[in-house]
Image 1 (cartoon, rainbow, N blue to C red):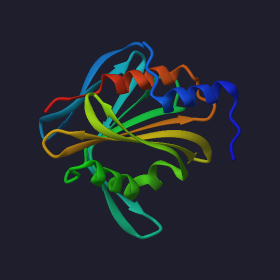
Image 2: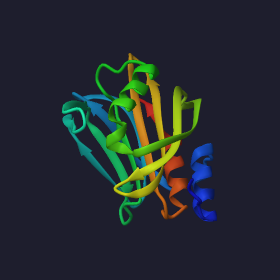
Image 3: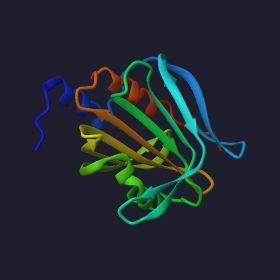
Image 4: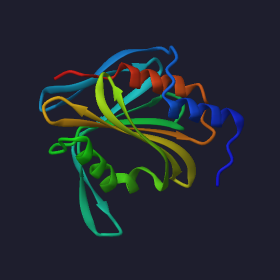
Length: 186
């Protein structure tokens, strides 16, 4: 069992509860596939955006490859304790399929995950399933929020937010502002 400091626990609780407070998030970004816009969100000031194309990663335990769609990731410019990634995998058409996709790639995101809460909600006005929990990554404790958002036209967006233990609790406001800015563009 983990014992969190007061500030870390408060930060995680705010992220887990979906509290949205005003934060600076004013650079619009659009996730596209083959020139087609699927969704957009706003990136906070002093955060960086990194993108990568489709690729395959190997599951070393099973020796097979897992396809990973184009990933768009954001993080604070000066702090790698916080990370948020977006993907819209081809062929994943429903929240149920998105949850299966998360199960297929979860070991690449979080080691020893413990789900603490699962809820159905709306993100950007669209149906979504949100999974919250704890685990480790690179040997450090983390809190995570994984969301599967039902996009129009048989697509989903999978969004994962990682907050390492010891991260500045102020980043929770930025993460929540990004979630609040999410909109489908189809």
